[in-house]
Amino acid sequence: MKQTLKLTDIVSLGFMLFAFFLGAGNIIFPPLSGHLSGDKVLLSTFGFLITAVGLPIITLIALAIRGGSWKDVSQDLPKCVALIISVSMFVIIGPAVAAPRTGLVAYEMLVKPFLTNTQDELNLALFSFIFFAITTLFAWSRGNLINIIGNLLTPILLISLIILAIAVMLNPQGEIIPAQGEYLTHALQKGFLEGYNTMDTFAALMFGVLLVDALRNKGINQPNSLAKYLIISALIAAFGLTFVYVSLFYLGSTSSYLISNPDNGAVILSLYVKALFGSYGQIALSLVVFLACLTTAIGLVSSCSDYFSSLTSISYKKWVIINGIACSVVANIGLSNLITLSTPVLFTLYPVLIALVTLAFLRKKLLHPKIVYRVVTFVALIFSIVDSIKIAGFDIEIFKSFPFFEVGMTWLLPTTITIISMFLIEFYIKSKRSLKSITK
Image (cartoon, rainbow, N blue to C red; front, side):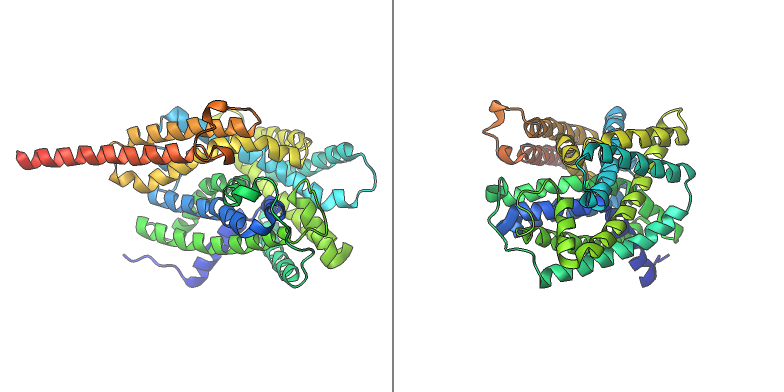
C-alpha cells in the first residue's frame, strides 16, 4: 500500500525539524567566525555548513536507513561503548555545555549590554540562578505551555533574522577585512571545525527519533516511505538553516566598524542590531532570543532528565533538579570560557559520530559489520583524542608530520584509510567465497 503525505504535512514536518535545530545558541557562532574569517568568509562559511547543516541532515538520513534510533546506528558496537558515547552526548547537550550555554547567550544578549556596573560575575551568578530556576520549574511540570511558546517564538525569531539579514545587506556596518589567525591559511578547515560547536549532529540523533515518531503517527510506517519523507523534511530544514547561517556569517564579516576583538558572537550580534535598529530594536531581539533560549533550555533539561532516569533508579523530577543545579553552576564560568573548555570534548566525539554515520550507509555491503564498526570507530577515536589533546594546548611532537594535524583533523586520513582498507578486505573475502562456490 502506497503511503503518502499532504504537501502541508511535509512542509510542517520540515519546519518542525528546522525549529528543533534553530536553538538560540546556534546564532552566536557564525558572527564570530565571519568576523575572524574576513575576506575568506566564503570558504569558512562553506566549511561551517558541512558540519552545522550537512552532517546533521546526513545523520537524520542514516537514522532513517538504520531504523530510526541510536540503538540501531550503534548496534554493532559493544554495548558498553555505545552506552558511553550516548551518555557523553547527553551530558554535553545537557548540563555540561549546551543547556548552560543557552543561559549564557540569554545573559550576553539581554542583560550584559544594558549593565552599567562592573560586577559581572555577581550579575551572571544571579541571572543564571533565576534563568535555570525557571527552566527547572517548567521541565518539572512537563506542561504544554512551553510548547505553545516555542511554536510561537520560532517563527518570530526566524522573521527577526530575515529582517536582520535584509538590513545587513542594505546597510553593512563595515568593510570586509583580511582574515585573522587560522582563517588566514585554513579557512575551510577552520569553518568545518567551528561547525562542531552547534552540536546539531548530537541533537539530530535525538530529533530523528521524534521525527520518525511523528511520521508514524501520520500513518507512514514503511521503511522506504519513512526515509523518503525524513529526507524531504531534512532538506527543508537544511534550506532554512543555510539561509540563517550564511546571513550571520556575512553580518560578522561586515562588523569591523563596530568591534575589533570580540569575545564571542553574541557581542557582535548585539552591537550590530543596536547599530541598525537602535536600542529598542536591540531590546526587542534580545527578548526574543531570551525566550528562545529558555524554551531550548527547558527542552534540553527535560530530554536529558528523561534519558538519565531511564538508566538509573533516580526519578525524572530528581534528575530535573540535578540538571538544573548543574546548569546554573556551569553557566558561571562565562560564555567564552565554556566554549573554550567544551571544544576538546567535541573534537573527541565528532569524528567518532562521523565514522558511525558513514558506516550506516555502507553496512548492507559488509560481511562482518561488527568487526568493521569496531576497528573504524577505534581508529577514529584514537586520532580524535590526539586532536583534542592538541586543542587543549598540549604539544604533541610525534604527530606533527600527520596530514591536517595543524588544523585539528588528524583523524580524517587514518579513518578514511581504515574504512577503505576494511572494504578491500571484505571485497577480497567475498571474491574468495564466490570463487569457491563456482569451483565446487
